[in-house]
Structures are given as structure tokens and as C-alpha cells.
Image 1: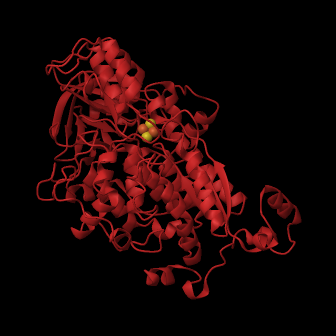
Image 2: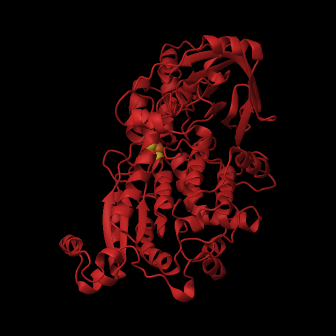
Image 3: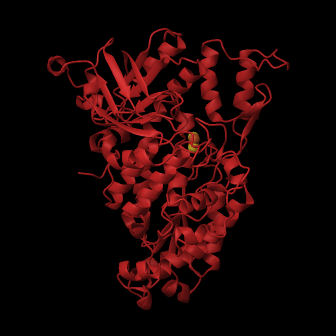
Length: 591
Ligand code: FES
């Protein structure tokens, strides 16, 4: 590992970088007395600290009103105390974020993805403007994690991430089983199609559907923490830990556990190590560490949103990662985790049997995960997890590699005349590997939701429900469509596949294809589909195609006119003007 540091550090370990090498421009001698006066006022205790202590920015994505984020200020305060106790200056600040679950299915969801850019912009801005020497980020909800890593890659100063942690499981007395927020979305479909029932196993079945909904809404989220299955937040946190950018256990330690507070205290020691060894984000964000991110995402059945976020992180860090890398890794990595949304268990259950470090240890031993990558502890990933317990022999969450849930990964990259620049499907195998159906098109998700509300999607013939003009530019903001996919699962409409140029939530499952590129708003083929066209989705040949000839498509293209931009001012207008396509991560700084 030291070899790595020597070869990659501009100064090397024998000639350590000054720990305050950015802030020293403001704090040395009396070059900037005004700046120093402000810093004394803000809390620098004395002249020695002013001239020698590194400045560590602590960026939490805290706000009230969302369980994923509501506790992050408390974590940040713990980090601040620990940083100060190690003779460093700690400066807390905040970035905005939004709740994916709260905005889901309404107009607010358009604002979600672009918060990833705002978070990255905020962290880059404060770190560079305030001359911070290091950065600790504390994200919680979905877009927070990639936003933090992108911010860290942009300023490239010693950094680490503390994940806010997963939520505990909820429990429904009426359904008599553990529940989570996704249960509520799925129940909406059953509620609409009048199939929401208490289990008929000898218990009390007297509750009305409204009483059952009330019970679910009251009990799905028992406190602080991000959505508890292998949804986007836990997927991103797991991948980032497997890239070496957070402390061991960060992604599986529950938000309310005392171990999460201990992690905050340990972060101070790690950030000092990063400063001393000049371990900067771009030394950790490499093609090799992305390989680990892809492996663990496939093994654990992570969210399709990981594709978009990994591409964005890679573009930001200058690492060449393409959709083909996802397919290559998906082809070789078995899907082995019985975790929600497609499985039974939650991250809190995985924590009980050792958590992500135990899974990493298992995958390193199997030769699937690269244990030699460097990490923010100053040690390799394998060294970090060496003292962690192995997965218990009698555990049931992580299957053996010999008897996986599926022999290859669940994320499939599809291409074809429907999506020439790619689309992302999540295929666990439970729903089959091929789907052929007639197209039914919806311009905007709201139209599909209204059709579902009216119970208009028939359970008879195979249908491919296409939601378009919901891409990065068209949405704008590439909104997630959990509401429709969950309602369809809840209503047990197994005869439909969902296809969109927008995204699906990490909590979605079923036969779903998102991120169709080029998107409808720029005239991609998805804009030219007509109701009744035959669509084939084939996970074995990695293709998505429509039975429409090139000549016919060309005729339709001649008649197509670009949609009028619905948003012309404000943050979404800026986003729509700047954003790249989904196959390049939907970032706003790629020109
Ligand atoms: Fe925040 Fe699900 S809404 S992680």
C-alpha cells in the first residue's frame, strides 16, 4: 500500500505534504489579516492553530422532514468534536437535498436528480472557496451519496464519506409482517384495485382497506435512516464503501445504532491519515475501484440508479467507465442476496450477520472483489475487513456462489432500434428473461398514474407501458417512477413491462427498463413508438427492439416535432439546458 502512496503522491511519504497546504495561503504570517480576523471570529482558538491546523470541512446533507437526513446534523456535530480533538479545525456546513420517497410520483420528483449536482456544486464551492484542506461528507438519501463523491472528486482534497445509515424495519400489525416504505407504494396498487387484504391465516381480518393503509403509513418508517432494502441509498453506500471511500461498515451500520456514532469519532483519525499520506479522492476513484462497485452491486442486487450515478462519478473523476462495463461485470457476477426489493431481507438484517464488511470478506476470498485497493483508512480493503467476522454458516441472506439466486447479475444493458445508445433493465430472473408485448404509450408519468388510478390497465394481453418525455432534458430531471411500478406490482398486473426514458426507483421490481437513450425530448426512437407496436425486451440477447421498419421510423420522424419546453426559467430550466444524456451519467459539467 505504501508503494501505491509513494508512486502516486506528488510529494511521497518521505516528504509529507503540509497538512494545511490549502489553508496556509490564508493563515500563514499576516498575508491576509482580514481573512484571519474572520477565522478568529469563527472560532480558531489561537495563533498556533491559525498557522498549523488543517481546516476540515464537514458537509452534511441535513434537513428536517425526511428520515434519511433528519439525524445528519447530530452525526456532523460528533464528527466535529472528534476532528477538533485531533488538533484540526472543523467547519460544519450544509447542502440541500430532497427526499426521493416524499417527492415520488408528484411534480417534486423532477427536482430530485438535479440535487445531486447541487450537492456536488456546494461541496466543491465551499471547499475551494474557503480553502479547506480536507472534507468529510455525511449524506443520507439517494442522490446525496453520488453528489458527495462528485464534489470530492472535483476538489480532490483528502476526503471521506460517512453514510447516514439505513433505517430499521417497520412492522405492520394488520399484515403481520415487517414492512418498509416500498410496502406503502405497493399497497397503493392493491388499494386501487381493491385487493388490499389482511392475511387470511386465522387472524382478525376485519380491518378495512383504509385502516390497513393507515397502519402501513404509521408504521413503515420507525425513525431515522435511509430506505432499508437494497434500494438506491444502500446500493450507493455499499458501492462507495467497496471503493474504499468510507470507513468499514459505514453502509450497513443502522442510522440509530451507537456504532454509527463511533464511526463519526473514527472518521477524524482516518481524515488525518488521508492528510498525512496525501490520499486524495482521485487516487481512490479508479477503474479498479469501480470494478469493486460494480461487483458488489451485481452480487447484492443493487438499484439500477447505480448505473447513472457510477457513470456520473466516473465522468467527474476522469475515469473511463461505459455501459459495456456494467454488462461485462453483470455477465460474470452471480446475484446472491435475498434483499428487498426483490428479496425478503433488509440492510438491518444484513448488519446482524456482519454487515457489508463480512460480505466483502466473503467476496474477496472468492476472488470476486479486489481486496488490494487502497482506502481512506490508509490500509487496503482486505486489511480493513480482515478482523471482521465471516458470514455465519447458518445465515440465509447471502446465498452461496454455487447456488445463487441468478447465475449472473440482475442489471442488463439493452440496446436495439428502441434504444440505440442503451437502456438499463433490472432482471432478477423471477419475472422471466424475455417479454413481448404491444406498446401503450404515455407522454409523462402522470398519464400512466391516472390510468392506473382509474383501473384502466387490463390484466389480459401482454402490454409494454411506455412512459416518455421523462428523460434528463424532457422531464426535466429524469424523475423516478416508483409510484407506477409499485402500483403495478401491488395490483399483481404480471402481464405488463414498464419502459421509460426516465428512471425507476431502487425500490422498483418487476419487468422494468429505464434510462432509454436517446430520450424522447431529443427525438430518440422512444418518441416515435405508437400504440400497438410490438416491443421485444430480451435479457438473453441484451436487446430492446420494436417491430417497426427503418423506413416507417423515418416517416414518423419526419412528422415528429420537438416538444415545447414546459419549464423555461429557474433551476430545472438550467438543468435541462446543461444536462448530458443518461448514458453519460446525466451530469451538468460535461461540455
Ligand atoms: Fe431517502 Fe429512500 S427516500 S433513501
